[in-house]
Length: 141
Image 1 (cartoon, rainbow, N blue to C red):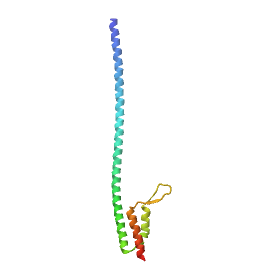
Image 2 (cartoon, helix red, strand yellow):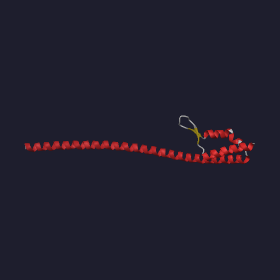
Image 3 (cartoon, rainbow, N blue to C red):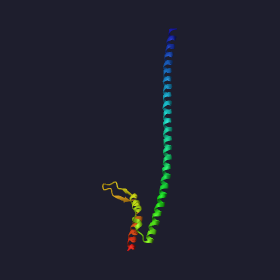
Image 4 (cartoon, one colour):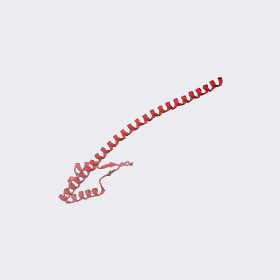
């Protein structure tokens, strides 16, 4: 009978050992579930932020397109005024404070040592305005 009790004690020890392993696996599974839940929450927050930034970018694109359209309108108006002045022989308007302000606004600083100003207006428009000024000046005499 004594041998039979030893076998039962060995089976009981094995069962307890297996039960500890099962408990460890269950605990590890709970930790993994918690980590997964945190990761999913972080992913949802990141996705929400990404959606918000996408909306802001779309808004900025709309504003940029509207500003480009308005710039084209202003450029067209300036060309019309320059042509009208050319036809009238009146170059004094091109030397007005408004024209000087426009030229100042259309410059951007060079990031070099000398900080030279560069025109952002197209070269063709600049040459046209120069010719217009010279022609208007000559017509004044």
